[in-house]
Length: 366
Image 1 (spheres, helix red, strand yellow):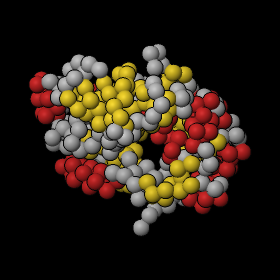
Image 2: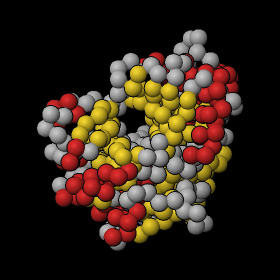
Image 3: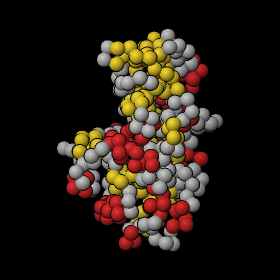
Image 4: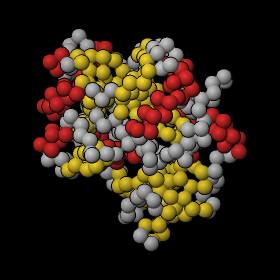
């Protein structure tokens, strides 16, 4: 049975094209995916991300538990509201999921994990938590709306209680705090996102979500669907779980080595295999590709290099660049000239450093 967010009827009333996404009935676009993409890059757009799974962790040993569970080190979280991006690994060093963890206090942390991995994530986290006597509590009572774009923060700030505005305006990136929204609704506002633009991700009670969406719409924030969210995050160089990494891919192979904290004295799950792979040399690497001629790079296409074959992971037309870009996983070493098989034609592509777009503009060399 397909699940629905509390905003489902609102999306349908707006004429959204709905699709099954990880078991959820979600809007792919509201008419023009490219216009929605540009609205986020140039002004402000909003996404219903209520399908994401919010999990609260409680108990005096919660920090100790997360030091064991996550490849990144939660000891970086010292101030209330601070957030950290991390991978959660299996015993082989493969990525079970990537997630964000928020620090409330020593006995309360919050995780936000992917919708499509909800069941396996909850089972894994609950099993690992038992040894630390940590309570794992899913929060289906929360909706989540992401407001992204160069004008996103300003439009949200205008809707907040006047007493809260200066404090929320001063939030640093990857930091969150509580505030009151329209009609006093309680909001948990995080300065995070998945588009490469500044903005907020807002958690709030389900019963207030429709009213907040309407207030944002009246403030000139454009609704945007999962299609635009995908092209925006690809341009911004952000991984998608299930396409760019999974249980059989290590963070080294997904260009997420920066999220691994190999600090002394912390034996997190998957650490041993990660250290072994690093010492032996990572066999596969993830790179960025640009196609300068006409064509579209798509998931699963074969990539040919001097060291053997790889494949396209995430690939799409990039509206900001007006050309196709992709992530690819290829054998390690100098790849030489690279080509991609597009419907039986071998087309040359350029290897580039990503992100492809930053602050709404193409990055150098793209």
